[in-house]
Length: 130
Image 1 (tube, rainbow, N blue to C red):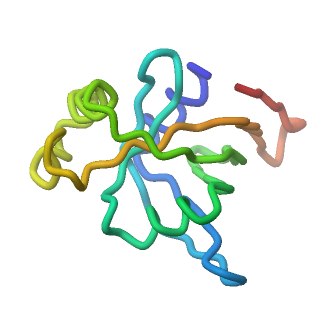
Image 2 (tube, one colour; image 1 turned 90 degrees about the vertical axis):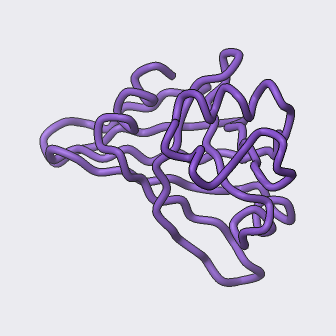
């Protein structure tokens, strides 16, 4: 999982896909951190992405850099515990302009049943589960 975290941090932006009924939705994300041994990202509860994940936690993430890409298939599970939110905001201080642990909107999304695949045009795919 550490290799996945480092790849996402190195390339800064990854794209998160969710399902809204029968329509896929994709948007850029950047917040990522490990909290208590689990990989997390962060959003706001009022956003459509949070509502979509609450209805259906299945998601995929894609990130690209230096001719390599990472795809992660996972369930993203809501976690709004103070400890988790504090750790996420400390690891991603730019979010503090928009979120606070106690604002009732900040939401951690925990990766569960994750399958991460590293790919490129020059090497065979490599898969990590966590």
